[in-house]
Structure formats: structure tokens, C-alpha cells
Amino acid sequence: MAAGTHTVTNQAPPLVEYDLFATDRALAEAVARHLPPEAAEEARAELSAFGVSAGSAQAQEWGRLANEHPPRLRTHDRYGNRIDEVEFHPAWHRLLGRAVGAGLTGAWGRPGGHVRRAAGFLLASQVEAGHGCPLSMTHAAVPALRAEPELAAAWEPLVTSRVYEQGLRPPLEKTGVLLGMGMTEKQGGSDVRANTTEARPLSAAGEYVLTGHKWFCSAPMSDAFLVLAQAPGGLTCFLLPRVLPDGTRNAFAIQRLKDKLGNRSNASAEVEFDGSTWARRVGEEGRGVRTIIEMVAATRLDCVLGSAALMRQAVAQAVHHASYRRAFGGPLVDKPLMRNVLADLALESEAATVLGMRLAAAYDAEEAQDPHERALLRIAVPVAKYWVTKRCTPVVAEALECLGGNGYVEESGLPRLLRESPLNSLWEGAGNVQALDVLRALRREPAALDAFLTEVGRARGADHRLDRAIRDLLTELADLEGIEARARRLAERMARVLQGALLVRWAPPEVADAFCASRLGGDWGAAFGTLPHTLDLGAVVERARPEA
Image (tube, rainbow, N blue to C red; front, side, top):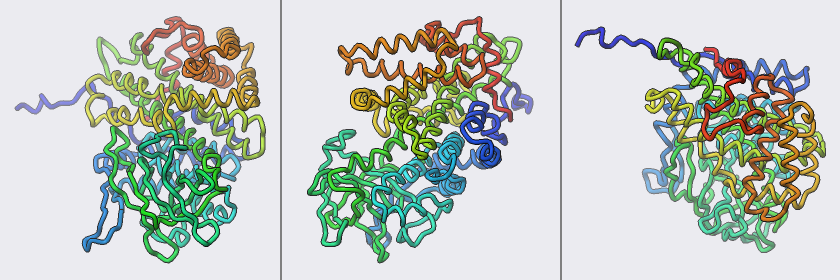
């Protein structure tokens, strides 16, 4: 065959060797906005270094390898001893070590720590989303551990460490640990109060043994787990280490790993406790949900951030491809209809990033005892979790289509993003759970609604479409007839109004105008690429362009 038939033309170069942070204008601006000037410069340098690392060809190759070589369960060693270990490809450990070293488990108590950590999590998740699970669980465990000051004193320095120590050893002998979580059981799912795992107290204060199962146990290779079980006083939270202080293995039988649609680099397991499984109580008996709920809220925010990361990477790939690919006489990115599609996707991506980073900033302010921010988090986290995670799959699917057949093949990376895209909507409570949690906040915590209305009210008067959307939302909130059946509609409307308010305040005029015209003003179709043609779509696309 003639060599000329293999000449490659009209193909986009790989999107590698670029700074994921500096080229993400919405993210970089959010970090600068939410951090005090004295911290912003240091954070920018730190995140840019991490962004360069994440954008390297090496990191992207690690992401590919970690997914092509998923974890394997080893229940026994060669001699027949039960070991219950999960083996990962070296690429997984490199990604996880780099992320831990970047501080992605150490936000609590650090000035501006949640904003910095959220930005880093957005970057890491663009490279490979699966290793975000242990990062999220470990980070989120801190507020639960603080319910037991003695435990927090011993464990918090290890949880927030920047040292990744691979392998199972007594946790308190390590310089850094990872934590997982086990709440879900077969018969209950999200209804954790239906859990049947039993906790029997021992003679030593705070010590118990557990009997039962967990249908989904996150990150089973972790050093310890926060789990729920029924103690004599009711549903209670426990800390369950894999290795006991004397070096022996705790009774923690991994029955199998889940064979998942996506998230294939990460292990999710079914585990059994045999009646001798030792655990330490965290918080009071009967207050397990209250103890672990702040952990759940923090992981829900990570679901928002993880979805924002997938959207950003999908949009970056689509804009990059369209900038190099030529069709019908010119670059795809210059074609009016393709520009409309790319701009529409970019709007959804930026709105997700701006909302996720605003909530991260609320965590920093909440740690400083700001009551407005605490109340805002109570309602805005389930609102954002509901809506942003649901927008992820259609965004990624449309971005894949922008690459045509090139996007449908595995080597493009888009199929992995697409398989991953439904995950964050499912984990930590699916859509109905989030929508009902919004109603619960509205009914039980009036300060939460006040904080939400105060937040969106800060943009009132800047855009007539936003003002009208706020008025319509107030009308819907005043009508309680059939409210549960309308919970999804209400959560969606609240999310769009909040995103619109944030963009009107902080985004460039062309971005805010396009968002309000389409998402709030009704000038939008049922598919992406249906924005009003009179908008400055070129500027929106240019803002989303990754510079390789």
C-alpha cells in the first residue's frame, strides 16, 4: 500500500501539556474572587503547578492505564489466609499520591482551604475521576470525626496529611491515611434508617463489635471506614479500622467488587462484618445520621465539583477539536451552528463551576461561624447536587458528538467521560433524595430559604429576566399544593436562578446575557445549540478555549 494513503491531515493534535488551571478562566477567576488577596497569589501558583501536572501527557496516560486495568480483589493469600485486599495498577497509586500531595484531603481549618481544595479537586477529576472517591471520603470524614474529640485529635492529622502511604498497617502508625464509608444496605438503599447491621457494646467505653453487611462500601482499600449500625440506643456512627492496633487484621470480608458502568478505576465493594468486627463509636448512640450528615453534605459538594470537572473537560475537548478540524471550507469553530452548540455547552460548564466554587467558599465562611453561609449551604448543596449532576450527562454526550466519530472511539477519552457522567447524580443520594431534602430544608429551617433569597437578591435589578425568574420562584414557593410531586421542578428552578444570579454578578456580560436569555428567559430549545443567534456566541466560546 502506498505510504501516501497513511498521511494524517485535518486531525486535531492531542490536548496535552497545558495548564488546566490557568486556561480555565471561570475557575481561576473564582479562586481569585473567593480568596483574600494575601492568599490568592500563593494559591494561584500552587494550583497552576498542579494544573500543569494534570495537563501533562504523563498524567493523562496514568488516567488511561488506571481505567484499562481496574482493581482486582484478592480474598486470600497463597497459603489460604484471608487478607481481603484490593490491588490497583501503579498508575492509580501515582494519581492518588499526587492528589494527596496537593492537599486534596486537607481543607478543614486552613484559611481558604475549601476554595483551594475544590479547585484542585476540579483539576484532578478532569484527568481521572475514579481516584476522586477516596479523596472525597477522606476529606469529608473530618466533621464526623470531630463529634468525638479524642478520635479527632488522633485521626485528623493523618486524614489531612499530604503523605500518601500505600498498604495496610495500623493506621495510627502511618503518616497519612485514607477513609472510606459504608452506609448503604441491600434492603434500604438511601433509606439508611432501615439498616440492620448490629453493634454490640464491649466492656471498654466506646468499643463495639459489628455484625452485618454493607451493599456499597466506598474505597475498600482504605485504612478505616465510617459506618452506620444499630446500637442499643439506635442508629449510630462508628469508625472501623482495617488493621487493629496490635497489627492483626480486623474482620472485614470483601465479598466482591461491583462491576460498574463507569468509575472503573475505583473499587466499590460489598463487605460483611462477622460479629467480631471491632469498631469505635463516633458521637452518641442513636445519633448516627446527625453525626455523619456533615460528611454526606461535603461529599455531595464533591459530586457537584466532580460533575463540573467532567463538563469542563468535555467542553475543552470539543472546543479544541473544533478549533483544528476543518469542514465545509473552514474551521468548525467558525461555523455558526457549531459555535452555537459550543457556546451552549460552555454556559452549562461555567455555571456549574461558578456554583460549585461559591459553595466551597461558603464552607470556608461557615468554618468562620458565619450563620448566613451555614444556612445557605443547608439548602444550596442539595439544590446544586440535584441539578448540576443531572446536567453532566447531556453535556458530555453533546460534546462527544462535536468530535463526531472521533469522539465515539475509546482513544478520544470522551467515552470514559460519558460512562462516568451519571455517577455523581447517583452517589450520595439520587435525584429524588436531593429534591426531597430541599423540601425538608424549606419546611424545617426558615433561615435556609432566607439565606437563599438573600444570595440571589444580591443580583436583583441587574437583569430583567433574572428578576422575573426570582418573582416566579417566589410564587411557586408560596403554593404548597402538591409540593412533593413538584420537588424536582422546584429544585431545578432554584438551581437555575442561583446560577443566573452568580453569573450576573461575576461572569462577563456575554456569558451572563446568554445564560439569562436561555435558561431564565425561555429563548432556548430542548437540545444544546439552540441559543438566540443575536448573542455574542463567539466570545463565549473563546472564553472556554483551552490553550495548549
